[in-house]
Image (cartoon, rainbow, N blue to C red; front, side, top):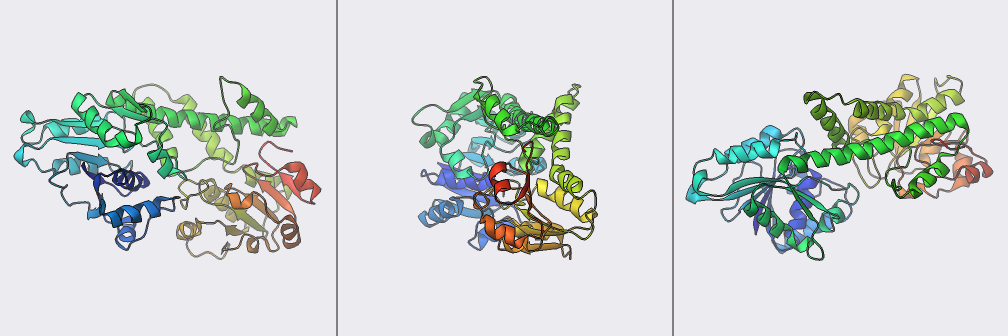
Length: 431
C-alpha cells in the first residue's frame, strides 16, 4: 500500500518507519519545526532504541520518504495516517479539507492522535463534506497510540493489542490489511466504535496513573508506620486480581502524553457533568509526590538549605528518553533553587533539553560524568532509574560527596546495603 503519515510526534515516526519495514510505501509529512529540520539533515529527533536505524534502513530501501506538511498525499495512497500532537486538532481538519478529491478517490483516515473523544467521528463527517463523497468510500478510524516510550519500536512491531474503532467494514478491512504483517500469529486487533477506542485509550492511562498514585500514597503512609513499602508492593502484586504492573512507588510520573491523557480524561468527565474526583486526586497526589525528595532533604537539614550543593541523577521523565515533559525533576529543581541550593545534574540523554528549559543559570551545573556531579555535594537525589545508576561505584561516591546522603526517588538501591557501605539512605516508603 501507499500510506501518507502526518505528524512530527514519536508516534508518527515509529508508525511511518514500522509500516515501511513491512513493504508499504510510506511518506511522512512533517510540519515545520525542529523535528523536520533534524530529519531533513539525516538525523532522528527522538532518542528511541532502534528507531534511527529503522528510519535509515527504510530510507535506503526507498520505502520511507519525507515531505512537508502541506504537500498533498501520493496519488496512489488510500490511507491517510494522522499521528499529531494532542493540541493539533485543527491541523487534522485542515489536512482533510485539502485532500485531493478528483477522480472519485476513496480515503481511510486513520486517527492515531490523542484527541478528545468523538474527534474521529467529526473527522469522518468532514470527509463526507468533500466533493464526490456520495460516490466514494471515505471513512475515519480511530487507532489509539499505545506506544511505550523507551520501547516504542517494539510496541509497534510486536504490539500486544490494537484498538481499532471504525464503523465501516471497508475501513476496518483496509486498516487490518495495513497492520496484517504484525497481526499474523494471532488476531491482536480489538474492533469497536471510534469513540469507544478513543475513550479506552484515556481509560487505560487513567487506570495506570491511579495505580501509581495509590502506591505513592501507600509509600508515604509506610514512612510514618515504619513499614517497608517494597515488601508491601510485592505482597500486593502477588494477588492475581491486581498484578504487579505500575505498582512501583516513586517521586511522581511525568511525560507529555501520559499527563495530558489523564487531564483529557478528567476534562471529558467534567464536561459530561460528572465530577472527576478520583482523577483530580490522582493528579494532586502526583504533583505532591514530585516534591517528596525535597521534603526529605528539607527535614534532614532542619530546613537549612541555603548555599548547599545537591546532585541529581536523572532528569528525563523516564529511562531511555531524552524528554523532560512534566518530569518530576523539574519541580524538584525549582524547589531547590527557591531555597538557594546549587544543583548539579547528570543524565545520559536529557541534558540538552534541561539546558533549554533552564536557560543560563549559575545555580545549575550540568555534568557528562555522573561522578563529577557528586563533588562536595550535600546529597544525591536519584530521580530517573537509568540502568547506569543501578550499580554505581560506592567507594568512589562516598569519597567524592561532602555528605554521603542518598535520596532514592525510585527505590532502585537496597537500603541495608547502602547503609552498610557508609551512606545515609532514604527511599520512597523504605527504611
